Length: 351
Length: 167
Image (cartoon, rainbow over all chains, first blue to last red; front, side):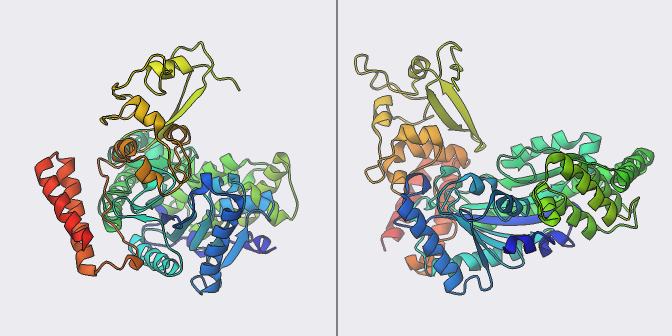
């Protein structure tokens, strides 16, 4: 199966290097759409559910909308394969947990995907490294247009694009940015940032979006209002207000750490580097924590012999499903911890 | 699992609600039949009719009675409004019209007071671009007028929009 191949290396967007990617790891936009004439998924029959899949697949595969895209039928792949797709952010946990005919089409470089039969018939997504919201909007808008040439979307003159949950109705747009905020976390200023985000009607979530806790140093923030503003207005708010503010807060705290607490900062960074290069068993959570510190150390020029690409790659391949795919066999938690530690030591030239 | 009612903490909870805060966050409430009725979440039995009671806890600001809400059902997908409240998910496109009265206050709460789309429009609708742009602008102005409670202006804008939409 192709998923084995997929698991071997990160998609280009995760290798990093996009604008401002030291703080904003990636940005993404997703559009929620439903097909006119079919009930939403809570009321759809099994037959209709399959028809929806076929309709979308025909449009994506057949009409050249997604040339060279792959489709993964989630009913036909096993749990580990599904988990690999979640870890790569190609699908949501919700799609894994859904039932019946469903799947995902995605571009070879994994920068664009269409989830079929998640909460809505279609969830179109485009992602890029760093801050590139305008490019993303241009691409996803075009993709949406091309899909629409062959699919009638459910649209209402007053409410816009209709969605199963009224919190997404209107534009159906969700703009989200994945953030690495180790300094705000370390200095305890993160709470202020949370409050500011809430005031701006933004949702803060964990690394894997909806339903995941905002723990560690990684956060995803996204708009909640989808009605009464244009797509451009939602994107502009991120571009001109939300993102610059976050970058300012985090940069300020990073500078403060370097200036006022260099010893504490270096201790944290080098301890984590040491742990990663020496540990014999290590959990996913501990790995995340140390990789986060290492990433900060690299971005602040404290550590010079590791590059960001290696760190970004380690974030992905040390996750449970990827680890098992790379190892070629199922592993229990204990085995994973040992193999994870070995993999990290090897990549970081440890002992 | 038998959950206890969150209000009286005695009876088992049989009414499960998903509510949406003004920030658009979903949260759940679990109540027993009695507490749900006294909070106006579910209708009281016909023997004690409470018609005319405003469902302030349920659908803020809307002048829809308990009974009217309880009776709401989509003619197409048969989803009832109470079912929607339990899951937070609608059953089909027609629900937006079938539940309009009860839904609009919820939509406004989730979208900072807005209840009109001003964004992208599918090309197949074939609205001439100029009119489409006018509509987008007018809908936005309407949204702002409503947000700022300038209802006279909003009514004028609404009429203007209707005329354009009919073209």
